[in-house]
Image (cartoon, rainbow, N blue to C red; front, side, top):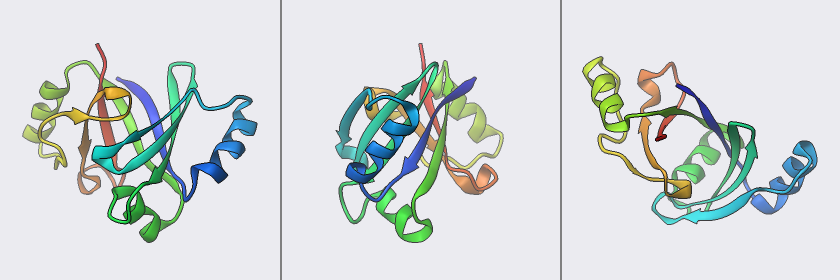
Length: 131
């Protein structure tokens, strides 16, 4: 298991991308809209991991909710796993509360699932399946 990426909630990609581009010394490697999650994503690849800047595309998106409650900042941490369904089953069997009982599609069309922060020391954890 490794840290795959950190998701950072921002009010505006237009404002945040130049800051991170300057900080990281490069433009984003990709940008996309993930309609299912109502989010626009700018991805900065950094070696084996990456930063994802997340902008809400709707007032009722999880990112909009996060921003209204906590303001901009780290919204989630993503861990890479090799067997997402098996990992979810094992975690649920161990008492971890799941947001997603079945994998769904995230940015980059990757298979993902979220764990509820009430079971993970207050941190929203996303799991992503790697081959």
